[in-house]
Image (cartoon, rainbow, N blue to C red; front, side, top):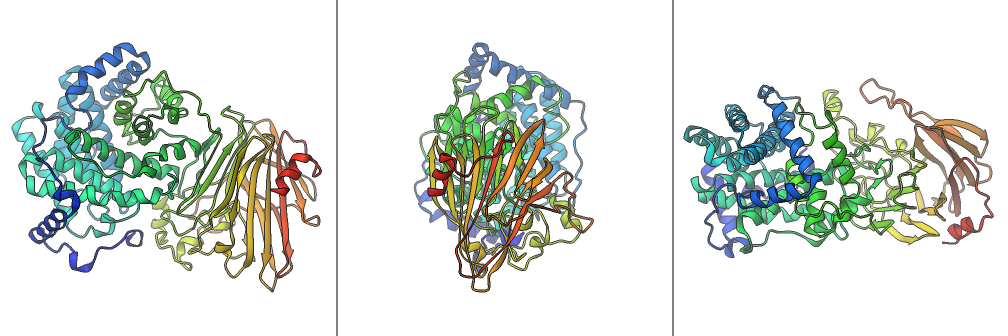
Length: 638
């Protein structure tokens, strides 16, 4: 994945440990942050996120808030179930040890929290044993440094939170492992993530900083250099959230990178108090609104390598309390409630929800009874991968439209510029299949990480525009280096939507392409593409991907059926277009088969250098919208 990351100057490559440390210390000592460092004496353990002074206040909150108390009880019960599990072995899957590292992070956080809040020695003994098991690994797979970073974070939390209860021998072995298997490998050959604009930067620098804070007293020079390096560089990926908080890698990777970045900021503040300021941008702080609106009634707008299914995101709990915006947890609180009330959703035997404990701690800083329905029904964010997100209400059966511009070249990007999802009547009608399993494609020797125009990545159906809800011109791919801005948006009850200039990603195919999409009058969806092909003319395909049952009524009208509900797909222009279906199934045996998914739409031949309009209405309820309806005319006039 070298292409994903900015590369440091070759003059600064870390060739040996002594030289690496010398270079690192020289770099950070001349930074503005390092020059302003106050006394670096560390507070006593525990010092990361949940200092000992917070235990009593949390106990009071648990006594006063049944919701928080239920979450606490579930954490302890999960920790009890973990006691029966053997410590994971060092098993590398393809390039990654990541599953193992994440499992250790989850178990150690649950066990350390449970011990601190119950004094039950079983939790202490299990966490100590887990840390020692990980310390005995030959390495933490530094060639895929996310693995090393998450394992370092796991042992850092365990060492810090349980420090005074660990035996001297255990402390020594854990300290050595953090240093030799975590911190020092970050000095050699890791320049690919050091100044990256991606989640790798956030996760890796956070893992290293946690390790350094945890064992600071044993090697202050090394640890201070690593801490200052992290604070200096972790601001870089935060700039990808500019200017409004829209995260270019999508909601799923927002949850990943932002959660670790939030842990860094929170740990920084718990260590230094008001003495120093962790690096944080305004757009990073307000990105919780982006994440809130990226979820529709039936799942996330899962563009890029995202997932539609809803999930708990620890970062949302941090942004809600950091920005005093509890409404950002409007979807997260009921999800948390379901996780707590279920006996199966928080499995002790996997790595999901590994940041559940930090999320709970951040939630405890809010009044959990004061999470109200958000006021805004629309949110639009500019940036590297701009999105516009709209709904008719916050009810479960609301109309929801998520649409994007941007570029395929962003990290984890797809050729999905102009693509959208829609929800209505409690169903998702226009879908995005989202991420493909990386390991499956890598095992087939497909290079999915290069993103140039001719790269193998774009041969995969889920990655190219042929399987997204956007235009296909002459069966060609979108241009990876194009960037399509949102040129207008509207957020009133009569019209909620956006206009996107698609021409930059169809350079050489179209001379002009503006996509307009909106929820109209809170009743239906309307789409219009205003297109001018190049001089030779073009065949343009307009289609949506759906898992609904399809019944073609006539050449311009289709009824979609799903969950006992109906939605009408109707072509308003061009008048001679004929609806047809297109396969969503790959022709090889290694890509996902996309069961149940079908493309429904039309193809039309457009004359060169002539302005044409492709207009489609998607109406929930099965009744078509008349094209002379005043609300539709308002949309056309916009």
